[in-house]
Length: 63
Image 1 (cartoon, rainbow, N blue to C red):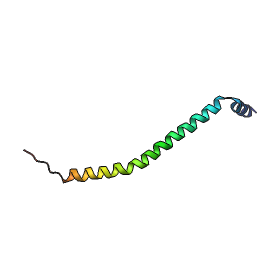
Image 2: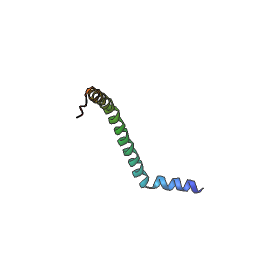
Image 3: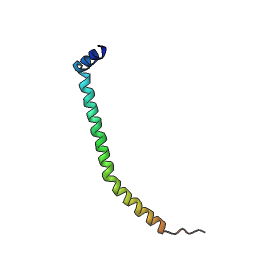
Image 4: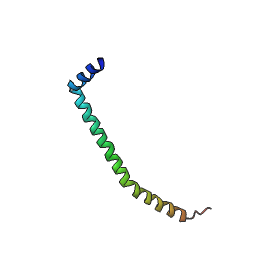
């Protein structure tokens, strides 16, 4: 019985709606971050490969 009272209180409380809004907003921000990471990762990988090949082609002179 106590759990049903808690559910009724939660449904009637306005704070529950605010909590849902924050969860949706947080999920949207995380989704956007993953989308940006996915789109940027290919460019950074190719740039890192170019830098690596350029550095390996250089010679170091010692005195």
